[in-house]
Amino acid sequence: MVLERQYVIPLRKEWLKVPKYKRAKKGIKAVKEFIAKHMKTDMNNVKLSRWVNENVWGRGIKSPPGKIKIKAVKDDKNIVHVELFELSEKAKKFEEKESKRKTVITDKKKAEETKRKEAEEKAKAETEKQVQEATKNLDEKIREEKAKDAEVSAEKYKKEEKMLEHESHAHKEHSHAEPRKDHPHNKAQSKHPVRQTLEK
Image (spheres, rainbow, N blue to C red):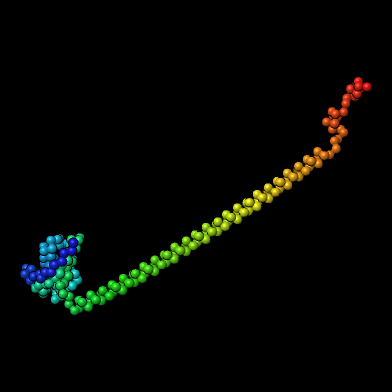
């Protein structure tokens, strides 16, 4: 919850309590004490703006203003921001310049951020493209190797078939050849000479 208040803070009765060379310091302390008391917070949580500080210190340390009109805003974190109720012409001009400068800086930062994001997206796209190309090349290599393996296996199969055909052809030729007379199988078929005499 945001709490906003406007106060006219009397400073003269406070800075009259101290020597002349401490009056402006006492005026700043009086502002902080007043805000801490009325906004119900600690003095460390009171943050004075640049223009409040300049208004108190503007005429030097020995002659601060007798009173000051301010606007206090308390945020959710219990921190109170103190601003001047009405800025001077000089302060208004300065604030306008500052706001313009901040907008320029934010625009530059946004442009840099967009450029960086675009560069990152480009780099990401390039890496994805490289990965796709690499996978494509790898797939092609695997296909080529598979095709080569298939060709080699087909050649081996053809060679084995030719060898088997050659062996079977040679076996057939050997079986059709005339039986040798001195072969032991042929000897067994011819009758023994003793048997031949007995048969006679």
